[in-house]
Length: 150
Image (cartoon, rainbow, N blue to C red; front, side, top):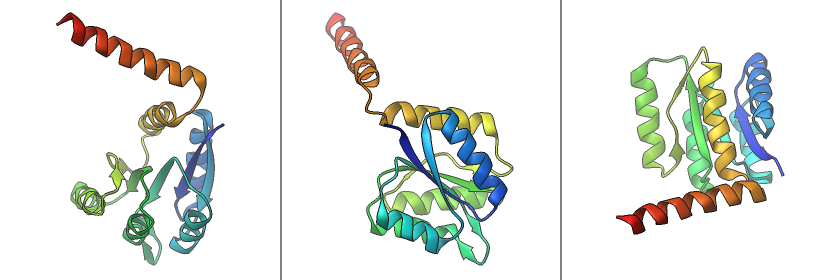
């Protein structure tokens, strides 16, 4: 079963690029152009990860963060912004205060390789395949062996 990514961005080109990257690393991507679309999708289904552009035209990505908090979303959220570092830092603080799993902000224009790497890590964590379970189990076993050896 593939992981599910919600891409929230008003720009069709960004939706397309982010969706292609997501599919390359094991996600099925669904796009939303607005707060309303995102709200409908989030009420209909769950997602393993979310990318959120803060600039949604006349709407704000902060509205989406509030919605995610209301529905008690636990999926990792990657905030994408062309705003300065201060705005991104403030958004992360707001997301954290809402008890959301906000990951490091992604600057816009998007660093594609960095986002691909981050999504690959998320896909590896959320996948429920037997191979991933074996990998997680062997990692726990190694940790236990290291602890026992000390």
